[in-house]
Amino acid sequence: MPDISFRWLAMLAALTILGLVALVGWELYSGAQQAVRQFGPGFLVRSTWNPVSDVYGALPFIYGTLVSSLIALVIAVPLGVATALFLTEMAPMRIRQPVITVIEMLAAVPSVIFGLWGIFVLIPWLRDHLYSWLKDYFGYLPIFGGPVYGVGMLTGGIIVAIMILPIITSVSREILRSVPDLQREAAYALGATHWEVIRIAVLSYARRGIFGAAVLGLGRALGETMAVTMVIGNRPQIAASLFAPAYTVASVIANEFTEATTDMYLSALFELGLVLLGLTILVNIVAQLMLRALTGGASGRT
Image 1: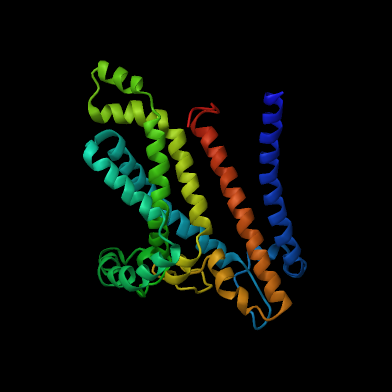
Image 2: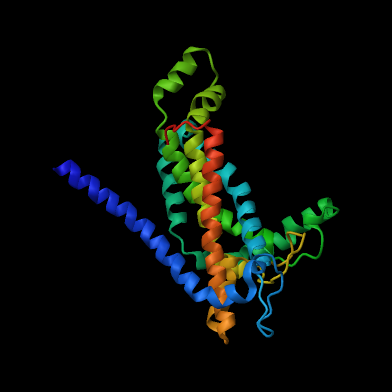
């Protein structure tokens, strides 16, 4: 009887989560019906966002969300996994806990604080040093061309990378700690060096979990709002340069929801929320398919 009760309670909990997602999706769809009827599928590929004329398109925001999240992953995943490896495989015991405490404190900092720090510290430094250097040496590339404003797509990606770094590091560290010591001992017994043990015995065993950590970080990056809003520039245009101001789906909703003066404007913002929900679900489905391909369809341990 206790086993049956626990099974039904666990199933109820799982169904509750699915129900909440469905309710959120239905509420967004209900609010977006006017825009859905007016613009149809063209809403996803139209680049115009003009509240004055009541003409709306989501493409610049989808582009900004995906590109800023990709930049954040490119920066945060290698750094987070390397930090986790250092803490689990190489760091002396006396410094592990202080570093872990700092990482956990970083995860607790509100996003608006990151945004303020980005405005007053990060943007001036990037504009005067890193961006100037990139433009001087790599300005012939389209992604590093154009004027340097300080605010822009690359800045938004960097601030998101800082925010998702604690998540990726903490999850990766727990995954690496779960690797059995027998894996390491077997590799050492075969004559492997320390680096070979990490590469062959540890990382290969934990790759599924590390991929999961990256997906969790991506989920946070897609929905990040305040810090990105404060540093990305908030311009609804698609530009090749990473220095150019941009916009994300979450940022435009946060910026303009209270300013929506017409029913169509409000409905378009609801549809943007629906797009963000769908984008998050789609990205997670693609990540699961990639994970199955990576592991050959095996369940693996995480």
